[in-house]
Length: 78
Image (cartoon, rainbow, N blue to C red; front, top):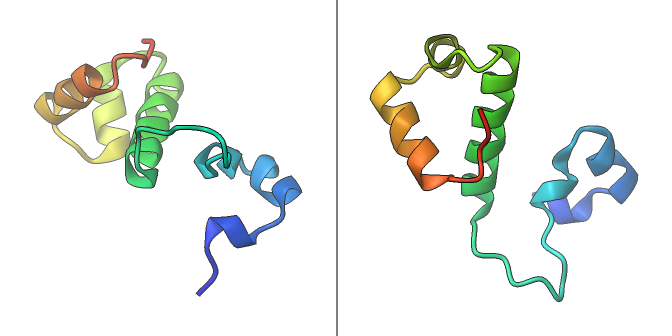
């Protein structure tokens, strides 16, 4: 099985996946799943120009679920 750590850095950067790779000396609190979830929410909100209803449709989630995640990831800017 190939993991993200096995892929070359230039390829990860090209697709914006380099954020998932933890630096050896970095103390990271978020899991890979949490990072992916946060990135997906940010991307959906950006595509929807901050419209939460549209972002929910893009993500296939309810508004209440989105609000729960926005509380969890406080650094998401709308």
